[in-house]
Length: 242
Image (cartoon, rainbow, N blue to C red; front, side, top):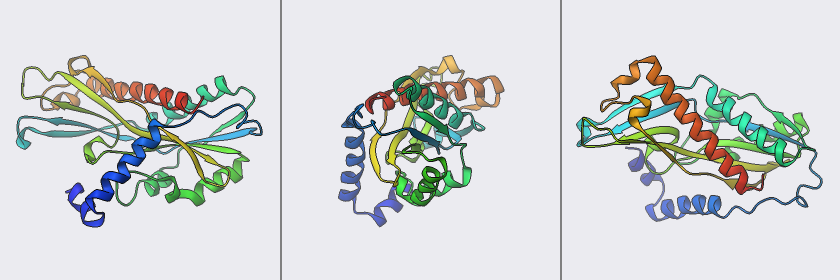
């Protein structure tokens, strides 16, 4: 339904080209140099990730598919802010760093509209205000992106198997992006990172995801997602030179 709606609005060729350009932009990010950051004194970090992370299972037929939500309850964005702040402190210890508390309304506005990728220009006035109010020379923004599979948007888990007795590995998808904006709100760098994988049995996931009703299993699923978020952000900041 999502793909059909999107293709009604955007010709398929343009969709492929546009999405490929996003991926290429991530892959070809050039590291920031000390010279480029020479006049930077203060930066702000903003995380606008979706906290309701999906756990999806794809079975033999559509009748075997299942879909649940694991609510991170603020921990996802707190993890993102912590990881990026730690990386920046280590790479640029002379910087003053402001971690901006996550604004749910701003995140909703960013992710509104055609949900195949979020662009920072959707919330450019708000990001400009953050730069102005904090006195930041640069603003780092974490946001969700996706492929044309809506169940792989942002952070989450997917399993795929035709064997009810062996769910196999859980793919922990990390369809997120770290964007770097100057104080005028112009995007000057963007980078992403890899997905991850973990045995479904290690989390406790079963074929129909009913095991997520167990709080312990839900907590392990949430923790696996945050662990992959950390790994992905380390990759993204490294690509940017931090």
